[in-house]
Amino acid sequence: MSPDEALDGTVAEAAFLVRSRQLSPVALTEASLARLETTGKSLNAVATLMRERALEEARTAEREIASGRYRGPLHGIPYGAKDLLATKGVPTGWGARPLQGQTFDEDATVIRRLREAGAVLVAKLAMIELAGGLGYNTPSASSSGATRNPWDRTRWSCGSSSGSGSSTAAALVGFAIGSETWGSILCPSAFGGVTGLRPTYGLVPRTGAMALSWTMDKIGPMARSAEDCRLVLGAIAGHDPADPSSLPEPVGSDRSAAPPPSDARGYRIGVVRPAFGKIYDREVEAAFEEAVRAVSSLGATVSDAKLPDLPFDETAILIITVEGAAAFEPLITSGRVRELVEPGAKWAGDAARSISAVDYVRAMQARRLIQLALGEMFEKYDLLISPTMPILAAPLADSLEKAFSYADPVGSGGNLAGLPALSMPCGFSKAGLPIGLQVVGRPLDEARILTLGRLYQENTEWHRRRPPQESPKPS
Image (tube, rainbow, N blue to C red; front, side, top):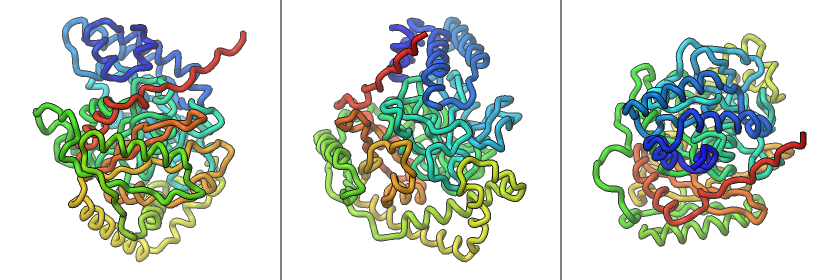
C-alpha cells in the first residue's frame, strides 16, 4: 500500500503496516506534509506546518521500529493538533491576530503524551480566534480566515476546531486533536464526515491548552473511525497532577481485558429526536431514522427518549460568557482585544464583565439541576442517540446566527454535565454532504460509546467515504 493510500485509511490499518515494516513512517509523514502544503493551505486548515520537527520524529520512529522498540498503534502516525495546544518553541497563536507569534517553553500534556506514544506532529491546525471564547458570528473569525469544508468548499467545516475537522476529513493527517466547550469536536466531525470523540470532562488533561471555560473545556480526538478514537484516547487520557480538574480514574476503554462484544445486546438506547421543521434539514432526518434502524438491528433495545424541560442553552451561554471573559481578561484590559477579526468580539469582553456574580451563581445552580436530570435519564438508558447536527454544513456566506438558529439541548446539556459523546457519519445528502449520528453516554462510559460506534461502523460504510480530491492547478 502506498503512503497516500494509507493516509486515506484508518489509523489502525496504517499502524499494522508500520509495525510490520510494510510502510515507512518517513514516507507516510512526507505524504501528509505534501497534502498539508497543498490541500491544507487551500482549505485554510493549517496554522503552522512543522516540517523539520515532523521529519525528525518520523526518522526516530523508523529507527525505533526497525530495532524492535515499537511503542504502540500511534507509532509513526502523522497527526495535527488544534493551535490552542502549546508546542515548545512553535508559534501557538490560538487563532487570534494579537497573539500570532506567541510561544511556550513546554509542550501541552496531550502533545507530550502523543510524542511518547510515537505519534508524529506534522502541523498546528487552524481554529476560530480564542476558540470563540468572546463570541463569533462568521466562519472567517480567525487569523487564517474561514476553514473550508473539503466536501464543498463553499461551505464551512464548523466549530472552533475547524482546521482539525477539515484536515481529518481531507485525510491530510492520520488523526487530529480538537477541543470542545460546546460543539467544537462534534460539529466539525458531522460536517466533515469523520468520527470525533468528546471525552468525559477531566478525562483528558488540559495542561498547556488555552483556557476558555475552565468548567467546560474538553480535549479529544478526531479520526476516521471509532476504533481510531479509542486508540488515540488511550494515549492522551489519564490523570495529570499539573491539572487539578483531571480525573484520577483510568481510561474507560481499557478497564477490562474481556473480548469486545460482537453486538449491542443489553444496551438500552434512548432516541432523542429534534422537532424537525423549517430550520431542520429533512435529509438529516431521513439519514438519522435509517441510523436508528441500523442501531436497533445490532441487538440494542431502542426506544424514544425526551429531555427534561430545562434551560440548557441559556445556562451554557451564560457560563461560557463569564468564564471566557475571565480567561481573556489580560487581552481585554490591554485593549488588544480590538485586534480580533470578529467585530462583536472586540466589545464582548466588556459586556461579559457586566454580568453579575449572582447571575453566574444561579447559572451554576441551574447546571446542577441539569446534571441531576440527565443522570436520572441514564438510570433508564445506557446511551442516548440523536442527530449530531440537524442541518447540513453551513454556507461560508451565511452568518452563524442565521445558520444555527435552533436550540441544541443535547449539545449544551451534554457539555454542562461533562458527558462523553461520539459523532460518526451516518449518511450523505443528495449533494454529497455528510450527516452525523451522535451517541452520548454516562461520565466515564467511553468504552460503551466506542463499542457502539465500532459495531455500527462494522456494519456500515459511511465512514469509508472520502471527499473528492482537489484538482491540480494548471502550470
